[in-house]
Length: 394
Ligand SMILES: [Fe+2]
Image (cartoon, rainbow, N blue to C red; front, top):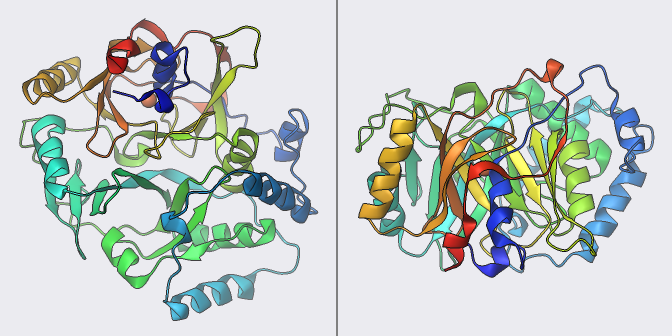
């Protein structure tokens, strides 16, 4: 169940539910500058240092985690030098190649002291396969890829990073150029991290709320079929990524600007939680990237000790949602929210606690959006029915 700190006080129940839905619009003909001028998140393509400085100032004002994985220095100086040289060779002064072209949530990394807890949870409750990961840890497999969840060993149970996939090497280099033009600091992944994640290249960066993001291209795959130990036919992944992640963003304005102006996400829709009409609402913005999933990322304006509000995975029938719910009860996993259907992405789902302390939404029927036809809106109810988050507070 979500701890009080994982959802705003005074409204945890309806509040946590927003984590799962949204709906949005991308207007392809619209310019970035025009869009942000209208809401105060001004982007200055001819003077990126202004926006960057603003992001940095706001980031500094927010307390960063003391041992954030993105802040761990790498000793792979050769990799660092090669990556910097690669993008500086093609980047002329003051030239910004444009937005980063993220295709989907490729994987996430979480940590736990005892890996066997995640193994049992993944196999017995989620119905996913588990294998040893190179260099230690667990691969949790939910489709033809070797893994979509990487679980590593560590003293603190928490979410560590979101892995975002770029289409190819050209897109990856363009992303580095964009980061450089925007003055955003990043670190190359070490050789061990690249091997463990099974990608061609990897960089890591931290948003103004301290969330770690990894950008990579060229995942490695043996394309072995997914064979669920619980008979789950399939999870909905492919071009839409593994699902979505909802991250804490107490430094909200700067983090939202980072997600849009740096990472290239676009708004799907908005939920403003108003537990007390006399104070400013708590904001949750739902964001999409270059796929049809209603949202791959959402940002919630409050801190979460585990580093993640929730991750969503999607199955192909309500039968499988019900069977997962039965497994949750059989294995006495904590329910965080009852079955319900979200208003914005229409996902029918329930929420449960993972061994790493954040929630996991297990759902069916999520909206797939033609962004050219979509209009963003602000929704005022988290769910059409159900999703009682008070069960997670008991
Ligand atoms: Fe969700």
